[in-house]
Length: 187
Image (cartoon, rainbow, N blue to C red; front, top):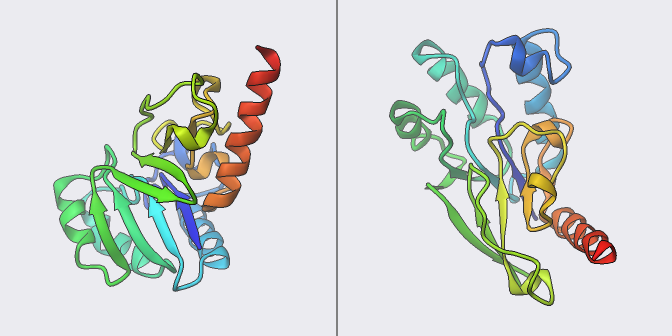
């Protein structure tokens, strides 16, 4: 199975992160995201995490690494704006990290995805179907809806729009196709 998520922000002790997500503390957020992740992901699953796994300063790196090491699945990491050189190098030591890139191209069932931390314009609706486009899956924005500015080919995978849990790629494809149908009915 292939899952995606973004912006876990482990140890980011700022109320504008954990409080907005409905938590009483950063510790509660850390625990819930870890539990949600592991309740869905099996060790053999591939998980693409599109940036900003860990914050909280250098003092929290070791604690954060220990938390990330507990995440189920084979982790494919895309670098986010909070993934400093120190954190990025530290992620390399984790046994569950299998890939680290600035962006990743992923082909899945005749769909073509560009995985990035930032929303990236990669397509338009001039094509016959989404399978003829390069579709952007991204994080960073902390939005609570799934589509960037209503574009059905740009899908937010971050925890803020998915109840603090990873999302299955098949569900993303279904959501994107449903959004295309809505757009076409308006045209």
